[in-house]
Length: 275
Image (cartoon, rainbow, N blue to C red; front, side, top):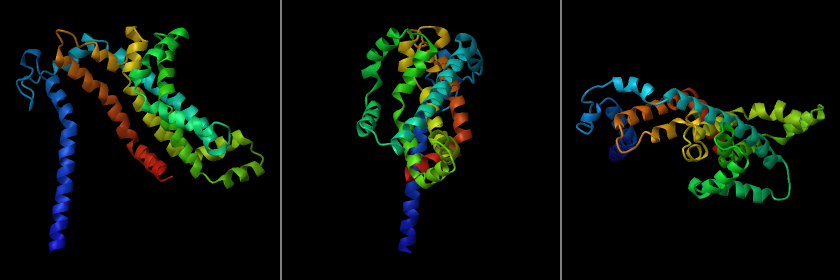
């Protein structure tokens, strides 16, 4: 009886911690939702429910700012940076897994160090480099910067998947007449598809949430992502109901995409952790 009672209390404690964490996590989103359905003059009167149920805020935001343009730019940054990052991570991860070369350990360590440095520390030299290459205020400048600063995790994840592929399969393919490139694309990559999907998903969400680099490296409204566009709405007379509405709209596409790929994403991350 004592063991059953103890187990029940432990189970209740776990659920209590989970419930508290869920509420703590969702509270900012719920507060933003309440504010998005409240008129400007009534903001702050209630945090539990909307006072006005002002659904017109969700309609007016599309004319107040260029939300469609912001979302378009965000999709371009996220998808293009994810594609480039995954392609480079495949070749870099395969090289680290299969080849021996000078500076291999130094390269791996340097790759990890790039993830430790805050963006604020390197944003000035990045701006100078992009401007020198005449890529300032272009999609290419922002995309290449995002890829260059977020390559470590996809590369190491793909390396772990490649390490799990038996070398005997590649030797068998070589006996059948496949060269190294054919072996990679015909034998190795089909086995590591969960890792490729996971790398792409994580790189996509990383590109979706970029703020500092697009803000510094662009000035045209057509190249502005939704994160920067919403921040530019904040001034001395900020309409916070519009800011909250735009914020919620900006996370809806990312949440929908995550719901579509969450199973494969979690499966790939779990497989990579085990491998």
